[in-house]
Image (cartoon, rainbow over all chains, first blue to last red; front, side, top):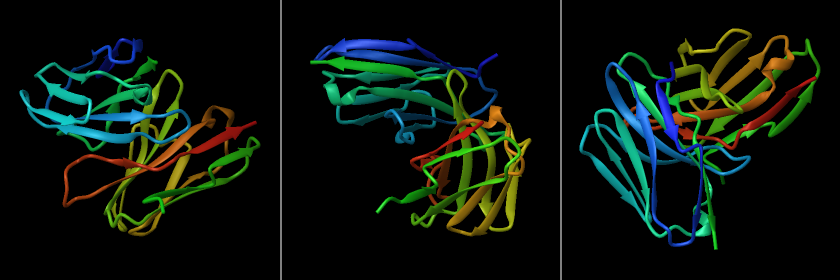
Length: 110
Length: 113
C-alpha cells in the first residue's frame, strides 16, 4: 500500500484557471510533508515544508495546506511557466527517507 | 555555480561494469542522500549519511555502495551494473541546523545495456 497518493495524475489548465492538487498520506507519525516541483530532466526543486495540521505556506501563486490525512497545493491564476510535475513527500518520525508520491503532471496552456 | 553538483550527468555502460557516480555540494550541509527515480515508481532512497563517519542503508540499497569522502562529497557505486539499475540518480543534501527538507542535485541519467 502506497504511503503517499497524489491526484490527479495529470492536470491541464488554461492560464488563469485556478485549481488544487491533492496529496493523501498514511503514516504512523508525521515528521513533515514536503512539496517539490520537478521540470523534465531536472532534479526536484524544494517548495514547502508543512509540519502540523492546519499549517499553511505560500509562495507566489502557490499555497500549500495540511490536514491530518492530506495536503493540498493550491495554484492561483497559473501561468504557463508553472507547468511541471509537482511531487509530494512525507517523512515519518521512525525514519529519515522522504517517501514520495508519483506526482501530478501540470500543464498550463496560454 | 550550482550548490549540488553531480558527475557524470549522463552515462551509458554495460552489464557487469563498475560505475561510480559522484556528488559534491557547496551548501555546507551535513546530511547527504542518494535516490533513484524510475517512471511509475517515483523517487526511492538508496543510502544516506549524516556525517563523514555515518552511513545508512535506505529502502533499496542492494547492489549499491557509498563512500562519504568529506562533508561535501558523497559517491555512489554500482559494483556490477545490471540493466534494472537503469534510472535517474539524484543526490540530495540537508542541513541539521535547518529543517528536514532535502535539496536535490541535477541528476545523473544512467543506462545499463
